[in-house]
Image (tube, one colour):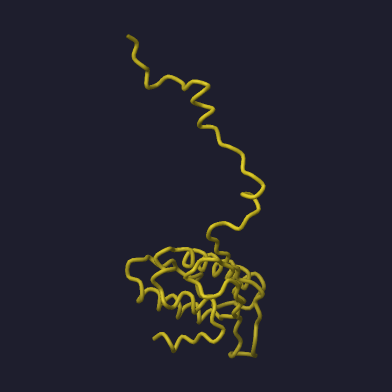
Length: 156
């Protein structure tokens, strides 16, 4: 009686069973079961002198039921992101909230600084909004991403 060697290569039949099957056209182009796309874009600088600030457009596309709207566009400034992050930290003690891109004190209105911050804010939102515990347990997440009238004073 021969015993199977656990280190032996698999047979051609076993390999064919494990081979990945190709996706159908419907599978390739149909809407995924659940999707979430967050884009931070179109930074605009407002004001003059010490009153200058930049805000960013947040575009959210999703079919996740926790979100009230399938498609939304809102504008937020960096201080809104700071308040949002603080609220999230207090609201959800079980989730480690990632840091925001750092504050900039020199040349903060240069194109390079604004673009680097935009990329960092988009990364932050993608991580936070994609977290399943925050999607289902956070009251502030959907409001921040989708409510144009969002105010930090409503949450503190």
